[in-house]
Length: 286
Length: 275
Image 1 (tube, rainbow over the protein chains, first blue to last red):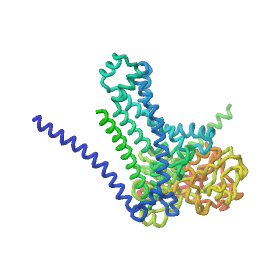
Image 2: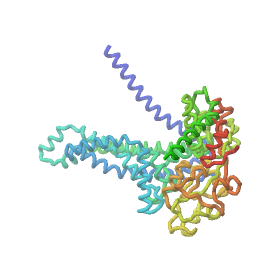
Image 3: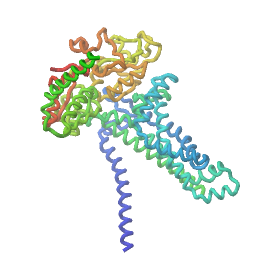
Image 4: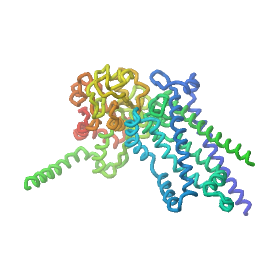
């Protein structure tokens, strides 16, 4: 009896896992199949290297790839230390009142709709950047700042959960050996929860790459490779949102799938790379 | 004192009298229920909203939803049967009409005007200057009589009907500089220009209000009057498209836009009625 129940549960969970794998892979296959016409007509290379000038038959998504990288990397890089610091305060360094109010605040931040961040950005940050730093105001910098604030709550909660789940005996032992709170944090908590910290980082990076609205509202969407943070840029996600309306059979529309594939691969590579780093580290420490 | 209350009374009586009047055109909706889904052109939205508001306040069983997206979205979504009415600020292309079996309903004429921020000293341009600005040859307001500051170009995405009309009739299919910033709707364009003292963009004439300044082009102001007389050349028609013959309720909605009441909404929103 117990055995059969066990079996059913096993099959059930295995099929759940299988379905999610199938869905993930079929999305990739779906994008490749639908994007096929673009790759067939000698566009395979040009779609990733050309400019985007539809009425001259150029459907390159290179400026959008650059735009995505220009916004996603700095946003994650800016957000990571902030989030790590905040989670340190929430877990070990702050007093109880600070910790609790921080926790409530961060929880609250996760619930704020993206569009609100966008609005604040467009009415406060964009004019501020335009007046103080010059340029059009709608630029990489505006999107990076707002995006880094937006992705930080997820990272903070992930980090603090990982830090909090470290075996308390380790902490007690370290404290008994005379370690200060900061030493305890740096030499016990952080190394022990490195897996969780990395998961949080990947998750936040995925959000930064996948975000559409912030870039669409604040980055200006110009079809040009940005050269500095005050230049406007268009991300692949914003490009998909803007070109979505084009004729289904047109190459412009097909380029959406090239964007989709690139986004997919970019996230996959980033995830694999970070996991690989973790494995090396774990291997070494064993 | 007496005077004001008398005035109030008169206004009250008048409004009571007019309510059944606009009920007259709305009467045809009596006894109908259902949904009308509308999407597409963003120039159309103010008129759609007002018409929908009037219908829905009188007849609670009718639900009308209005979404934007741009002309391309409107044509595509109605063609694929996602919405009942797909609005477009340009005439659908022959191949679009053929493929989806679209039926076009034209209910207004609209101009596309170049706009700048209220604080901009530049209030008129020649067509060549406009082309130069959009091509990226003229990059500073100073060279056309404004402040010494770089010009920020704003444009719309390719699916926009407003863009396609502006591109054809104002820029003569000239180049739009790759530095131009993209905004996704007429409303977003207005907000962007209203907030950017150095911006230049273009919107449907119906969307112009006190927050932005329309630019006189080749000596002709983009007013309703000049659009009507044909002096202002950057004009287009506003269409509501359906896939084949529309359902009864959708048909009634489109007919309502063409009634005197409907055409008054059109005129009140800064467009030119077709009837």
